[in-house]
Length: 196
Image 1 (cartoon, one colour):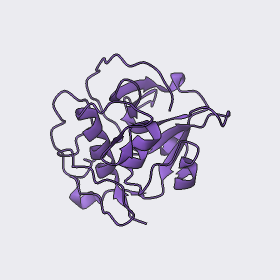
Image 2 (cartoon, one colour; image 1 turned 45 degrees about the vertical axis):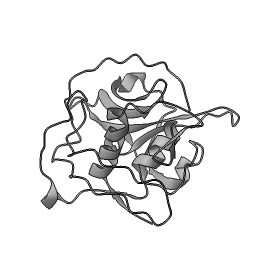
Image 3 (cartoon, one colour; image 1 turned 90 degrees about the vertical axis):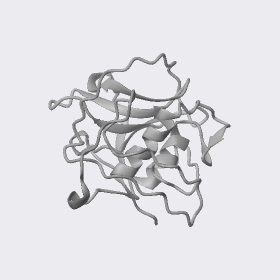
Image 4 (tube, one colour; image 1 turned 60 degrees about the vertical axis):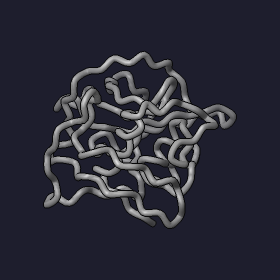
């Protein structure tokens, strides 16, 4: 099982936001399906494209207090014939943990935006990817956030390696200390709500 650091997870998520990768249930970018669960497969560097219903088998549940950037919030639709939805947790907007940032692949395109915890239904369950590991404190260095995208600083967005069982994702600069609490500028992007 290939491990991936939190800083690399966030850099990979940011790469689709910066490239404005369009949402699609059938299209692929970098070898990954362009829907919400394909996005999680890409950011976690998985070797395939699991559905939202399959993601719990690749992750471990965590509680709200344990959420860290690079974890996910997953809603599995109780109707097996319908789509669920998943978001990549980007960090808390405030010390009271009333709001948070997510990277999300949703119509029209990949976005980075804010939600309030009150607006997050109890149906969204926090999970930590089984391959996601913390960055080592000795390599944690701050850097400037990307232009125009309110993302946690994590160095340049990497080229994303298409999924293969033997590929090792490219490395990225680590997440700076304190990345659990990010304070980016609010962005407004017209995004239709849809589930994948």
